[in-house]
Image (cartoon, rainbow, N blue to C red; front, side, top):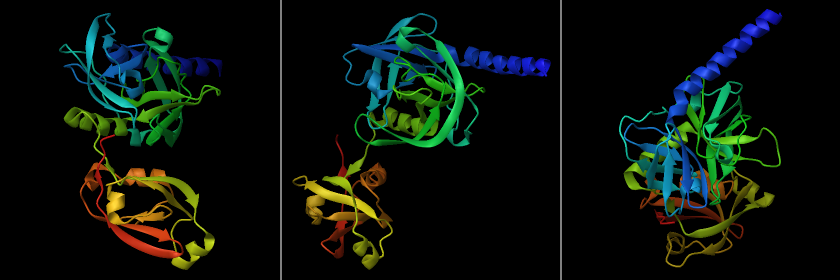
Length: 307
């Protein structure tokens, strides 16, 4: 039994060592103003991915490669709502890290985090994928979906570094920890990251639509749910409407309960945010509201959000 345990340990160690040797050359240290963090190169010509909160609003960015070179970094695009940013450095034939498929990740598989906690460059921690499909609230207030929970230890400075599999593929971008807990760390799924990266390279930002109403989550009175056969028992209470916004033009009023958008039930503000994508810009859609005890449907044309 002891010999078998030793053999398993050797296999585990070999898997981690092999992964680190493959992935770590692409991991970088980022210094941005008063803060810093980690990132990783994903194209040979110097595009790298990190967290928005690492580089956002920084007057200058310095990137230190694994081989010790320090290069100036230019922000290509930044999206605080998913806490992701793309930075470009000069260079060619740089070591890269490939994106894996976060949909194929399984709870319990080995997860390896590489980064620069507290400035200690190229630090490796290991653990497992603890849970999938988590949602995490970004500093902007929006929810980030497709978040991977792991117990691979993360500390300040790990932000923006990769969470990798034993195949040497990035399945996540390390982004947050719960400081009062142990073993509760989170990474933005690679599929989300891949989508955001493509848009940031193309547009410099993520285009989203908006309707110009301020809302809060509230329960819908049971009698209203039953009377109108609503698919949800909670809704978005309209507490404010921007002047000249799509919401005002559509006739939405303060006090309305938004229960559906384009035929899809809404349980709250986060559900509405998920639906207000760039494809909705300028496209008329039905918005269903409860006003008093009446169910009404108005046509709304979402506009592009510039925030």
